Image (cartoon, rainbow, N blue to C red; front, side, top):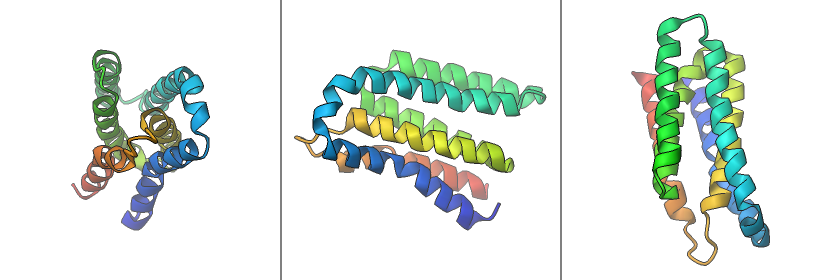
Length: 155
C-alpha cells in the first residue's frame, strides 16, 4: 500500500473524534442519557477490533501471541485506569499499532479503519464537554494515533 493512501486512511480514522465532537455539539442533550450505552458500545468496538485481527492472524502463532498480549493490555487499560482522557490516549496509541499491523490485508484494513472511526465517534461523544470546550485537548491527547501509525509505516 502506498503511503499517501495509508496516511489518508489513518487521517479519516482519526477524524472519528472530530465527528463525535460535532455530533455532541449538535445534540448535547443526548450525551448524558446515552453515556452508558456509548461506553458499552465503545468497549464492544474495541473488542471487535481485536477479534478481527485475531481471526486474520489465527494461523500465525507468533502474531496471535502478540495480539493476545495486546488484548490483555487493552483490558488492563480499560478496567484499571479511571481517567477517561488517559484511557483514551493509551487506547489510541494501541490502535495506532493495530492500524499498522492490519495494513497488509486490504479487507482487514478497511474493517479496522472503519471500527477505529466508529470507536473515535463514541470516545469523543463521551469525553467532549461543551462547557469546557475541550475539543482541542481531546484531539491533542489522541494525536498519538496518527504519530504511531504513520511512523511505523516507515520503520
